[in-house]
Length: 326
Image (tube, rainbow, N blue to C red; front, side):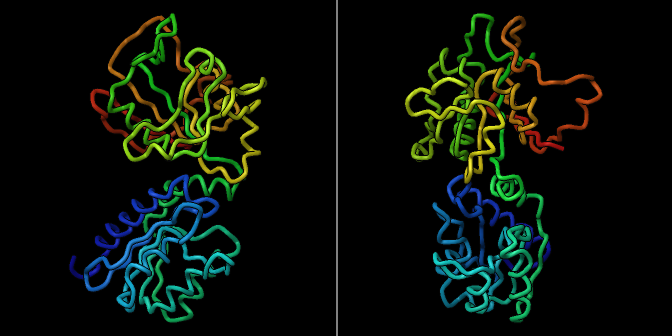
């Protein structure tokens, strides 16, 4: 790997961010953090927050490195925690005790129990600490936990699979399949990164969807199921009477809306969609069922400046575009 440079710092932080994705929707109540330990140009330890929140990413990486951690550089996606817990020691203290020489951090922890204190404690112990590398990417990776910290609700993704002209089904309701196998597989991966998946009551009645994850090796990561309805939910489902009800879902970082123009429109109208994932197939349907209904737009000017594209990629013959609130 050679000497550490700004370019190698960025590559190694990107590796830590990729590791953090492994804990997405699984690490609660803790954030999904990633950590990479490097010494003499070689990665000596890797870690990510485990299911249920422990071990932390730093603890996992330090355990893998053992005594070799002395003098190493740690790349961590979130400021190492500074508060003590009955579940384990503070990660800032663990890095100090291991003799780590340098710590590169993507994002400062907004939790007041740690905010800035982890950095201050490590610097006081003589560690070289740098913060802010790839902070925007870290915010995106930990968006669910950050939303819980800021607003006490899940981070909401709306998934739409449409034709080029914005239809989600034929006029008679036929919708299987608009998108290709590759796009549907990607959609299942997004399910595996969610805690709850929600559809409208019409979708439940018309399609009886399973809403599970059908990717080899990830079947056990199927999210809980919710339906937007004021009626009783089917067995095994949760009923949410309106979009605002998600504010009562304590400890749920990620909610995915996957079915029904009515449910999609209701959440957009309520201003409770944080991310759009639009899978667009190269087909035209014409007079079918549109992907959205009324979203409360009073004038065209208000539609502009609301969304920014953060990703675009081909998936087989289809195209995926990802947008976040501007």
